[in-house]
Image 1: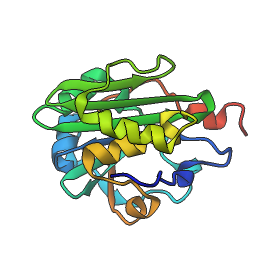
Image 2 (image 1 turned 30 degrees about the vertical axis):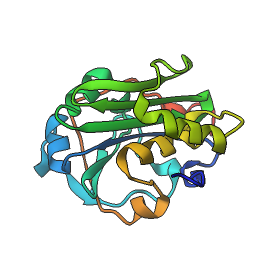
Image 3 (image 1 turned 120 degrees about the horizontal axis):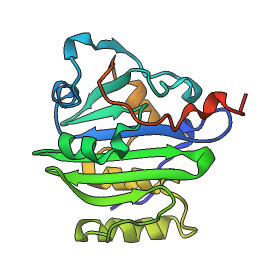
Length: 200
């Protein structure tokens, strides 16, 4: 039972906004990179940047790290919002993805099982799929913790992630992990390029 909402203030940059994409896959980092079309031998180790304003942006290398039985992907190109990518990546396993662009009050959330999207929330369209039975209890808990019905990226998405993966994402968890950084042959529109557009 979830009793406290997560602290996500560490994800907010200079302008108190979120801009990130995360993918969680129950597979090894090597398997995830291979399914994304990358070459593991081309990835190099490194930490997660300390400052959210210095997180990798669109077109820059993505990062992967193992969190127990799961691989966490720092996803600067928002691959986790592409149905062709996440359904392929989730074949034979479970995948959860989330992305947020706070300046546009936009967020995305997907849960996939074995190549099938089980639950999806996208952009300004609201709930795009009926809540499955597996999420009814956690959604009731989210309603209790967030009576003002905030956007998913303001906390509820992280509770859904914890329910579906067992991972409670924290700043300490990610900054204590060693990431492998590299490129994969996929790209999507640069939704987070706002850092240099009108906010300097």
